[in-house]
Image (tube, rainbow, N blue to C red; front, side, top):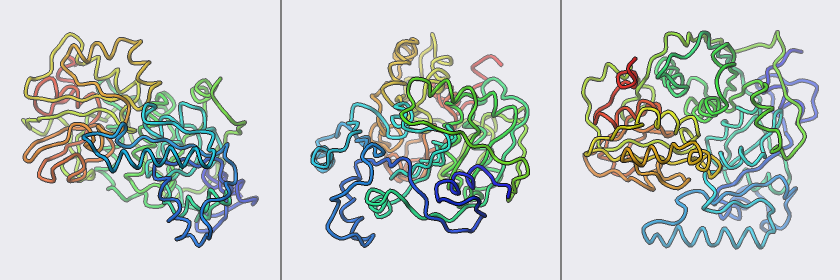
Length: 425
């Protein structure tokens, strides 16, 4: 029986020769990633019907814990500081092998860069943007603390096999257009739930030529389309990335040529333009050059959606030798220390600082308002994961969403700007 990538991974991890959409399976987990919500695991165990607390872990070598949210604790936030302290103590008491504290960065990027994600594997994380791991041909999905309690104890979890949507992206991206614009195009065309509990598979020349950073952006944002998984085929880019860092052996998975797809969507990358999602709905999207003059107070690039080297490079290229508008606060944050060091070596950080940008340490702050909180009546354009009302501070602030290139161009002009206008295109 022909199967998609997600179907093959769930079949192999549940000991079956084949599965079909709608089947329920109990699958072995290859990787469990946990934010400092590790402290909620005891209550999760109670909710999962596991008595006695966490006394046994199925495989400590397969558990990664990252203290990433609001780290280090800001603004005399004693509650956050206490949770982070207790998380460290819990990790030490339970003798977890892989713990990354507040200096390391955001959980997803840390887990990727540290080699815990490999092709053909199945990963669960207590954060919704886990489909990002599909960039490396891994079926990743977010789960809650009760589910994670079960995984930590038994090393398995039940899944309903999802239907799969195939997205074929032809042509090539034009200068000034980024993978984030492709996501926004899809969100605007089909809505934020068209992939609800589906797996997405990506194909076509534009995907083949896309960097891993770009694929990670699409995988990350697939959750905002409702996707359970978001999967790409493993290619030479994946194998080069994993060389010297992969912690586990792996076997890439490809879909069968005659696999069945619930829907096939074709997008012509040649026709894509810089896009902007309006407050506060990522399904309300329009081209950046059709917004007129929308003044901004803040421009943010970072988080697990736009904090990779490609994103920082795009901002630096636009801002090199220029200064952002005085009335604009521009914040850029790398997703983890590896990206941050790479941006330093490439000279991007120096370029951004010279342009008047505030460069912050790797953490979730640029996305959640942990740094750069918005006041009443302010307007922000962000390349982070979400533009929900109140996401970055005051519920009376407005948040637009766009690519890192569009955000950088907007910081330069002081109003929402198509990056091609400042790139001389």
